[in-house]
Amino acid sequence: MSKKKKKPQQTKISPKSYLKQRGRSLPIYKCLVNDEWEENGMAQVIVVRKHVNGNITFGAFLIDIWEKGLKDSFVGFNESEEFLEDIQEKSPYDFIEIEYNLAHNIVYGGLEFSQDQGYKTEKDFNWTKYILEEDTEDIPVIDISFGSGDWTGDEDDSENDDEQVDPYKGVDLILSLTDRVKELTFGTQWLAPDFAQKRIDADKGVDFKELDDLEVDRKEITTLFPVLLEFEEIMDEEHPNEEDLKELAVKIEGLIQKNEEIPQFYELLSNIYLELENDDKVYQTIQKQLNRFPNHFTSVFISGIKLIDLGKIEEVEALVGDALDVKDFRAGFAGLSEFEVGLFYALLCSYFMAKEEFDKAEVYYQLVRKLCVDGESLTTGLQLEVLLKFANHRRISIEKFYNKPFMEVLNQENIKEKITDVLIKNN
Image (cartoon, rainbow, N blue to C red; front, side, top):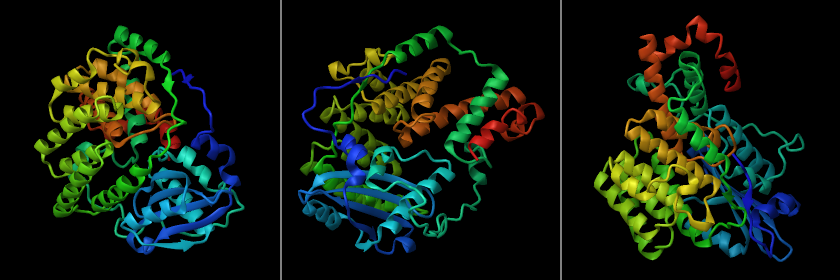
């Protein structure tokens, strides 16, 4: 895909550019982590650097010690110390100061652990990493036990065998294996070649909207991030407590009344109602979000995918119109960011799967696959769910063709010898 940028004239350097060029030249001021992070299995690491004007730039990194590794990160750029103190006060954690070497080992250890589990690099780490020192031998190695605690990975998942390609783990491995076996079984030709070629040609002409000038909004950090952490903590429980989710939903509804300009609150609220299996509330929340933010395209696309899961296909058609390509979507002169393009393709993949037009869904699956898994682009859980849903369709087709379970197909001699490179790459 073309990576040309539509970049306006700038009067000052953007936060991302500043960090990449000068971030590591700022002196480290202090490092923080939540107390009892080892016992609780969740570390919120904050690395703070100080400007000559007295302001600070900091990186916050959320690490799941027991299961997923590095999960999230963001940067506060050229802020006052009071701003960071405000975040700490609103956080569910109490923080303690630590040496930089420990902070570095927690973050990079979490990154390595997440990659070992088959997860892609956290979406913002490609630039938030510049808050940290380079990961070289100059940093002393501190032994941190990842993957320990209450989660052992040995639970019996036999009830979910139909949804897994076990024992192979990791989203990318699942997708790569089904892709390869599909090619070996049915060939590489498109199911709808004319439709596919038009979409591919249109994709080559996409210009991504420039994202470097987007700064993290102060209100988003101080109001949204704490409740995101609360939601993560609830969902990290083996059996999330319904009452805790309901209380958080009430809290978020109150925050929406005070912070109507933050669309992520609606997204989080609909996620909570999804967990509570309250489809009516999910639908009502999505409708409010779309009415309030009709031109916030991340909200539009994520809401569209959720509407499909609710069976509201006609409403999705109203959202995207007749657009089969980015150029035909109503984004206007501003265009779409690379992240939004990935969501647009995921929405159309999900849409055509819902209509059982898998020949067309295949094209968008490949576009999302290329943009969001094989590259270093931004990825959401919703996109991965869409990819896995299409991969499951392919798996079923393969099992019908061979009249045997997918794992047995992988162990056939004519297949086994031709998937070795996929296994090595994802090992």
